[in-house]
Length: 439
Image (cartoon, rainbow, N blue to C red; front, side, top):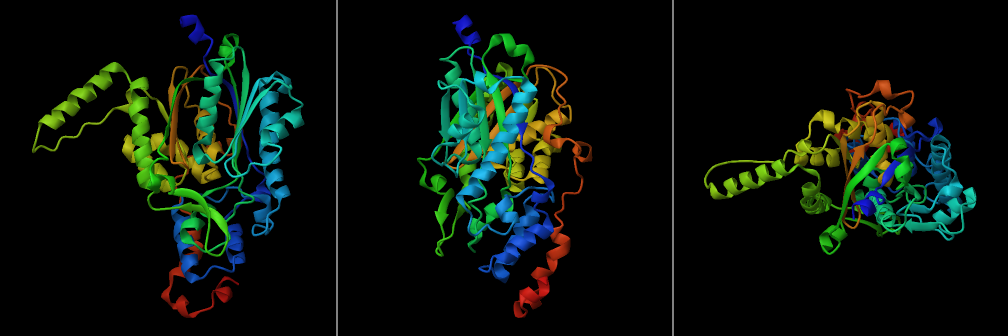
């Protein structure tokens, strides 16, 4: 059993995040142009968008799809979606193969997770065709799993490693934004435009023991939780059409409740795997004491830092980060990588966690033996978490943070929309044509 388990480890050899060109940036002025092109919006929607964008936690340097920048968001084509995927997948894979020295012909397993775009032939077949991979490669295309899809893909590879020895596996995590920019006026569906941005990541994994000295991380454990049986949780984050026929992603107020329920259920299974016995024992004793002591206000919490050194949270939005930080009892230092990844790149869906990890690496936070707790939440409703162990010292590749890492952390995260467009809340505008004001 010992020797069998030793050959089933999941090591990460490398990963590469996507960074678009500067002409794709959605800064304040670019966002205003996109908003004004939507003739379905009125003063009420403008005020809602201002409030949402200002509180989103996104900065001025996030990236949008080419067709949105060019003003074609209302009528995207199939070519727009394919061009978006090709740029993200192929640019990250090219760099990954070059840096690791692993040839595409050596890849045994390929997993691609994109929730909102599932063409035929599949995206895995598109990659196989591009790199002329072997005909016996085991390929899988995952869709519909939202922001937590990357953890699902990682767990799938880990399970396959238990059956197949001496394997190389590639996971490509991204999201299709080009064909899913919402052009209607429903507030609960406009949120996605304010949060989601272009991004993605390719990860190279292996279970070859002779390569473990070259690896960056080792997967310690992974736990997946899906509460789709709960109708409220199932519908809190769902793709629908609005009354006008515009397709978009509906985010309801019950999302926070669903996230808390899924997260709590996941932690019940995960924490016993990662925390030391003495911490679990202390918590059990303190909990019994709390139950037996009536009339006293006692509060005991698990000390996650007794088993975890770094927290890699899903950069889903400022409210998500604040909520997770509070529930886990994290400091601003712990939350800094997630906040900065959101500010610089936005919510890149399934690829978001890897921008957070890249920030930690660029800031030289990671040391050999450190444990990294990854937390992801997604449609379903799902909470998929895992813990990695750092395999060596000296991890300092800046990757997508090259040329700007010294500018972070930013002390002032106030969005420029506040200064430029706060006048939109003036009551006198109820009697003025907005077109004249923006022009």
